[in-house]
Length: 286
Image (cartoon, rainbow, N blue to C red; front, side, top):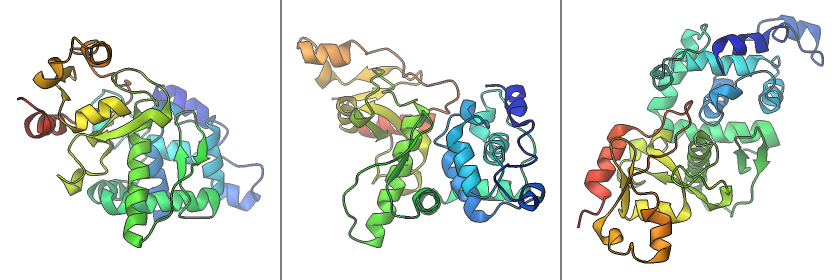
């Protein structure tokens, strides 16, 4: 979606909301820190092409914030204008990001390990009334409450919130499909860390440190049996290639060797330096 279409989608909506009191619709309401944290959370889970006032999920969340239908979609598009990875694609968001927006962008991405779980709790609280509710934002614009086991401590709660955020951001960036095979069964997909969870704490929750893979390819990636080159093409380790004569290995790995990851045009994709780390520190060279 280009910016002109996005702008047209807001026309006639920003001036007021029928089910809000007129004084609330007309008065400019400053964005709060919590609202911007929720918005930053959604920025990494919703595709740029969905940042418009026909997106029922965004309209619902905007209304829950006490804002007009177009307020949240417009704020998301404002954030795109200050996203360096998005700007690298040659596209632009809507101008109008405030100094507060810019400050929150820096703070959020500098402190992801703390602020991503906090934003996850704020979004859950807004949507369900329960900050601990495990909810999932999906590419089709649905927010689902998903089953999850009990937590045992404050630390484990924050870790789970962070993991939920990372999983949704990575899978949604890939439109809910395995970036190698195209498998679209969400229950069989993993947000696979490029730099392992325990290797670099500061990168744990960076969505660009993840690739959407099916469970089998995630396992192979985690064990260093596969990696991806500078052109994002699948590379198999020698020990895995030794099994290419086996039908299952051939079907799942030989078939895809040399083929690039499928990364949607609006997604930032994995960072080159993270993949370089994986090739040098995780990949099995024999």
